[in-house]
Image (cartoon, rainbow, N blue to C red; front, side):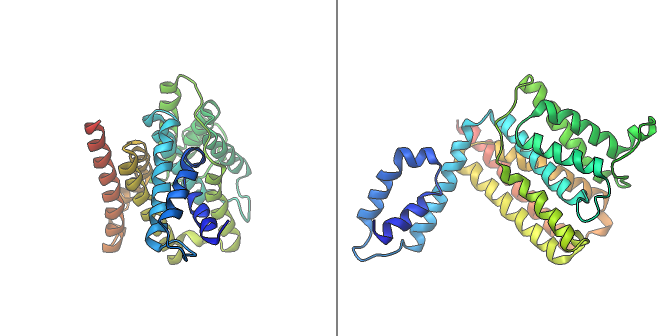
Length: 282
């Protein structure tokens, strides 16, 4: 095996395994025949095209997971849950609320693995705890005492999304997501140990903004590439807590804040428009 062929094979790993099994050797032979005799590495444009093709293939391959509305709703709920509990659960270094921490971890695992019938009651407890309704009923409060309603909205979104999935799927579970989703809260909880007030620091805010822009840009790309609305739906669900926070804290946001939220909203709207146009063509 030549060095060029090894590098092509590494690039082809960007494609789904089933695609590589069916078309990998054919695609590799075509690439090798078109390459210059003395070439040792793929051209930059060619490498980028292979990576883009692999991303599009993964997007199209995801259409076989579940109906678009169920898969998109599940993905949106998972995105809200992982980001919310990553930032709002003080796991390290103090274990301030061990019951709340355990509930959050169990809920995240249940949502990630598609265990709807386990996730729904856990999300119900979390939503009632954060809203304070259980405390008014005399039930001991082990969750955080939020003052702003925008902090309660993510838990309501998670509960509502899971309820729709359970009813719409008639109790059937969903395909499991990758365990890599759980790296999001683990990463943030580790940062709490390294530097506890990290959520308010400017470098972290800039990093999070960059990740969100890239993720929503990928959503738009996947929607166009696969001709499917599931990622657009997931992005719209993810934006609900953020827009609720923006609405509740309008005076605190300057020009940069509005530009940031405006860019995120524009990407979500663009993906929704792309999804609608695709469905019309179909």
